[in-house]
Length: 88
Image 1 (cartoon, helix red, strand yellow):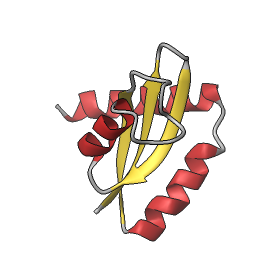
Image 2 (cartoon, rainbow, N blue to C red):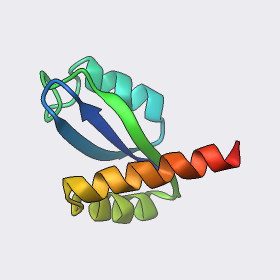
Image 3 (tube, helix red, strand yellow):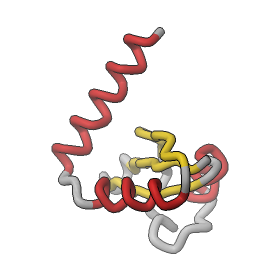
Image 4 (cartoon, rainbow, N blue to C red):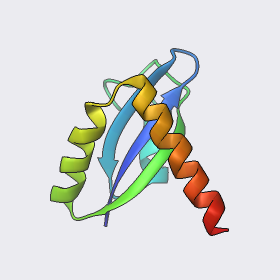
C-alpha cells in the first residue's frame, strides 16, 4: 500500500508533498534531516495523508497535489478533517 502525504513546517511556512509506504517513518526521516529538500526546514508535522493503493496511483496523486496552490491545500486539509470527524 502506498500513501500520498503533505507535511507542513510552521518555522518556514512551507508545505511538502510526497509518497511513501510508511507515513510515520517518512515524517520521522524528514524531521531527522534525511531528505535533501526538507533538511534544515523543519520541524515538520503531518497535515494530510491518503491511501493511494499502488505506486502508480500514488505518483499520479502526488503530481496532482504538487500542482495545488496554498489555498487549495488548506481546503483539501479542511475537507479531509471534516470527513474524518464525520466518520467518528
